[in-house]
Amino acid sequence: MNDDDVHSALVRWLHGVTGLTTIKAYQEGPRPELPYIMVNLTGTSEIRDWSQAVEYEQAEPDPGEDVGEVTARPPIETEWRFSVHAFGPDPTSILRPVRSAAQLAQKNEALFPALVIHDCSQVRNVPELVNEKWEPRAQMDMFLRGLTRDGFVIDVIEEAPFDINRTH
Image (cartoon, rainbow, N blue to C red; front, side):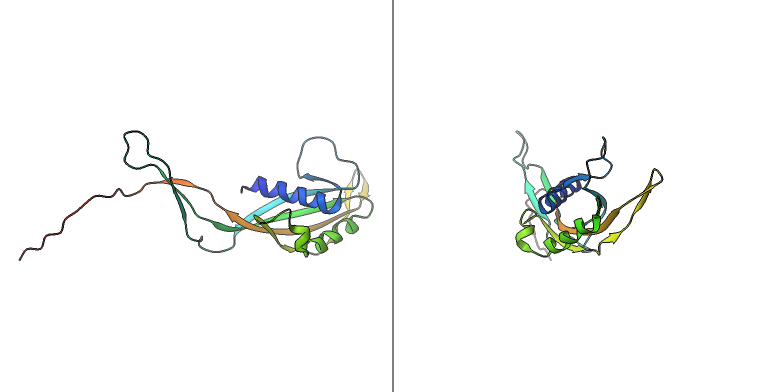
């Protein structure tokens, strides 16, 4: 699962919970009709210092080759951090139910099993001055966790027979 997949999954989940137009941050085009939600991926981090047991996959060897390429994929428990913004007349009322839905396994099934909502911050009232007029806005942080499995072809040591002889 890459970062864009996780971002899209959260956008779909928020739309499903709120029923509002939900977009990724920095998209081209005009602003949607109010009210709407915007989701910004602010970063990722590893949860543990070392990955779990590495997964290996060996491909079929090419004709004339003894051994196929080996791909190693370390499953890394990852946390994605998002900033979720609500725009509209009463934006804090848009985000408050999101915190409640995040607590219910039944509401999170759309993200399972690949992703889990780990935490949600408080809802912040953050009006913004746009074109010399204050626009009501709200913001909260959401933290999702899951596994990444980026694979790399690695060199392997080919097996070679050997004999041990002991002489005095």
